[in-house]
Length: 184
Image (cartoon, rainbow, N blue to C red; front, side, top):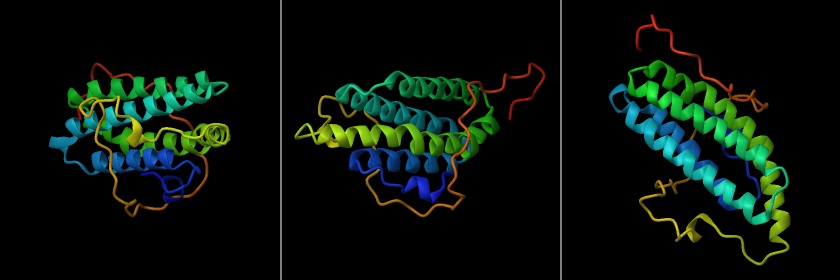
């Protein structure tokens, strides 16, 4: 799971911090799910990641962030990998899904948040000094509740602590399924 130092790191932008908190909470929930519930919990988690990335994309557009295409490309690659893994989880490859949820994705999130999301937060803070109001997650009334996954609002729960060093990014590709490998 993500280290406490990154999961609780403040970006200086409360709505971004809440978004990150909600992602870590959802990640913990899918990680703790039983094998019978894993596929559905994974699907819900992917929907929350899609929502979080859409919000960040909106923020980048609102402030006209330079090089936002690089940040958005990271989002697209990870979502592509998450969708690929979901189809394999639905085929019974739970071990792969758990590897992504328990190891690969937390490492990628730590790296992503501590680099490009912190740069976005800084740009948002600078832009906010120029504009009177930046919309918060609660200000997204144009997004219907059905289209937007429910986000946690409870305080951050305790997490296992790992070292606070940047982790390598998630690989561009998930290992191909061997035609002879049994399903997990």
